[in-house]
Length: 453
Image (cartoon, rainbow, N blue to C red; front, side):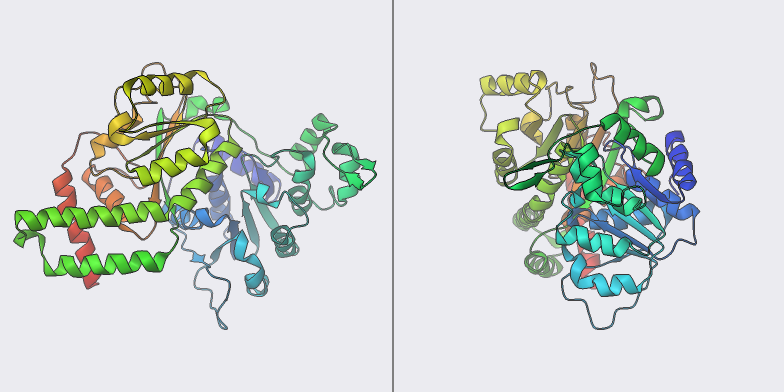
């Protein structure tokens, strides 16, 4: 069981006062997921539980529930539910995109708690996903909406969430829009692009929707200097990856590590490296989604480390107007300019770097958050990269996220690194340079175990 911080205990008591219907709007990194799980644990009668979240977060919810409160989950996938589906665990996790085909089954569960993660996904009241969540919430007594940015652009986007949480207080969109959205009628009809009476709206959120809102600066004294967290991300084309993995395991079974010649050992590294690169490429879409969420939920900067051009270059290209890149192809003058731009320009929010080329010697303390889009073979490389934001000159709490492709070689690799460094679940210590060859051998052993199981 994870020990909560004082502010998290206070937030759970706040949710209890609002009878399990609240908007948890804490800044990214402050544990919105954990607070929802903690309230759920302390109210064992609110079962079954349905969690609705973006596809990239489903497996992380499963992992967090098991890690923090020892709760096992059913993770729903696909758009064609089986004719017969039995609930093995009292927590069901589903992504927004497949809600509609599963609706009959979900409604039949008669859930007592609905958790809506990244509730800003409901900004448009007319979309199928918003209508589906609304339908799902109708007879659910307890609802927790989670979002670091419940209001992305305009107050009009917040109404669907407020209506779901408290339909008595927010029954009519048009009445809400007239008062808080500066509703205007023009030649083409009504538009709701304004923002009016915001102080009053803020108070209504606090008093009628149980809104909880903390920034990192509000609870800084309670947080450790550095938080490291593993996030499990889904991959595209899982069957393609599985085929490549099966081929490698077959080769590995025929070429046991202790029997390998030097040439075969080199081939092992090449084959394993290919599988690792493949996993990183197939999770790229989920990495994009995670970065998009960070940019939407915070105003801060983010450092992202990778290894290969096929990961770093697409990332930089997607966010070209707000990012800089340092890899092996960037000259010394360009590197200095990139660091200077990232450190000094508010508009430059993302730094993409190769772990080896940009993992030492740089000062990137304008950021307090870092993510690894790829894993290095040695723990020491991660530690050195982390020190780019966690160093002298940084007086704020820093967060380091390890974005790991679920059910791939990456997931096994990160567990080996954890065990090798004797650290607790969901963290990476990173001290010491480690022995990459020993890690290769351990990884081979783990993969072979998988083949024989």
